[in-house]
Each structure stands twice: as structure tokens, then as C-alpha cells.
Amino acid sequence: MLDAKRYASLPSFYRLCGRLFPWLLPATVVLLAAGLYWGLYLAPTDYKQGEAYRIMFIHVPSAWMSLFVYMVMALAGAVALVWRVKLAELIHIECAPIGASFTALTLLTGMLWGKPMWGAFWVWDARLTSELILLFLYLGVIALYSAIPDRRKAARATSVLAIVGVVNIPVIHYSVLWWNTLHQGPTVTRFDEPAAHISMLAPLLFMAAVFNLYFVTALLARLRSSIAEHCREQQWFRGEAGIRA
Amino acid sequence: MPDAGFLDWLSMGGYAWFVWPSYALGLVVLAANLYLPLMRHRRLLRRGAAAKEGGQ
Image (cartoon, rainbow over all chains, first blue to last red; front, side, top):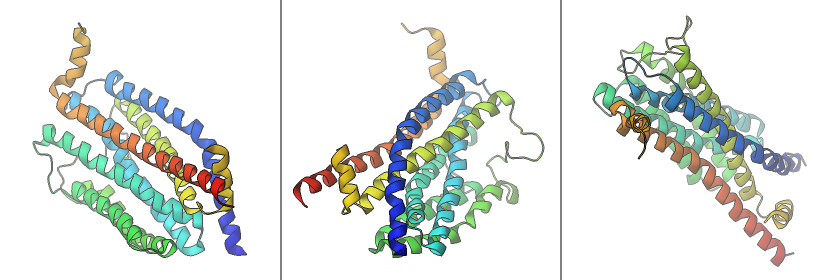
């Protein structure tokens, strides 16, 4: 009885995703285009790093998202563990590929920034290494989930892994302060005023907001297809598919 | 012929080979994360519709 009730929230969430997605997708695309124009064209040239600093507008939001998505994944995992909410399990596992993408993008754009600025694509610096560990945590969650045939057991196992991995998040954030790193320290999240000028800070924060919006859009797209996969044998989904396909 | 300002912008002050690949990678990653679930969803809808026609 209780289980049926829990399951019942999946069809309604599926329909909610279907209603929101047609609005979220164009909004994300338009705002992303605006953010790119701002970062690549309107923002002034950096006096020290020249035009190479423009990599920041994709690298930094991506790095913030790699941490934020991890926290969402771990939190949804905790909810799934404690209350056995099916939807939380799906949110937990669908966060993993998105977070892994952001982490990989952070590392790759960081390498493309590191080469002209530091002279090397990669150094075993505390910030870079802890971000690489984050990528392995995401990949570990994905691999573990696909290795356990029972999906509910799999989600429980990956939730535990994700929650344990949360210790890495403050390590990444504070790595530039705790260790002597080549990576620059925080420029935005400082207690005094930010070290970046408003003409560069504004497009950065705008891009960060767009990346957040993108995350919601991508997560809804993933959840919709994941609910469809879960409920593909069920009457309501086939009904839905009959109307829409 | 494209004007000099545009070419100048494209050259990114000599960092073109680092800036443009960063943005290209970004767009590929963002697009793939939307495209793949949308295709998966479409495939499932088609299969579900076929099952509804055939079964029950």
C-alpha cells in the first residue's frame, strides 16, 4: 500500500518534467548565448593573462557545478537511504553523469588554461588532484550502480559511496588555502570584497546562474527518461506513450 | 573579406588555441547531456506506444 503510494509520485513527476522542459530548454539556450556573448566579447581583457582568462567564464561555473551537483547527489542519496523515496533514488543516480561531465569539463578547461599560464597542462597540485578524485567518485558511483542488477540495492550502495565521498568537497574548496598550490586562491568567495573587477565578476556570476539553470534542465531531461525507463512496463506510461509518440 | 576587428577577436590575443577549444568542449558537453536523455526518452516513448498497440 505504502509502496504503491510512493510509486504513484513518479507519474505525476514525469508529467511535471514534461510541462517544465519546453520552457526551461529555450530559456537555457537564450541565456547561455547571452552569457557567451558577455564573456567572450563584452568583458574587458585581463591586464595580466590577456584573453586567456576568458576560459574562466566556462571553467569556474563548471567547477562550482561539479561541487554543487555532488552535494545534490549525496543529499538525494541520503533521502533515498533514510526514507526509501523512489524519486530521490532516481535524482541521486541521474546527478552522477551530469556531475561527472562538469568535473571532466573543469579539468579539461583547466588544462587548456594551465598550459599558457603555468607552462604545463597538468601538475599534481592539491586543487587539481582533489578535483580528479571527485571525477573518480562520480565514475565510481556510475560503475557501482551499473554493477548491481537490483536497482534499489544499487541505489543504496551508491548513496553510501556518495555520502562518504562528501569529505572530498571541503578538501577541494579549501585546497588552495591548506596547501601551497599553483592554482590561484579564491577570488569570488572571500570575506572581504572579491578580487575580480565587477566588469569580469558580473559575466562570471551570470554564467554561474546559467549553469545552474542548465543543471535543472538537464536533470529534468534525465529524470523524465529515467522514469520512462523504470515504468516502461506500466499501464500509465504506455498510455502516455500512446498519446505522445 | 572579414573585417580586421573580427579576425582580431578570433585570434584571442594569441590564445585562440586555448580559448576556443575550451568553449567548444563546453558546448559539446552541455549539448550531449541534453541530447542523450532526450533520445533515450523518445526511444522509450516509441517502444511504449508500440507495446500499447500490440499488447493488451
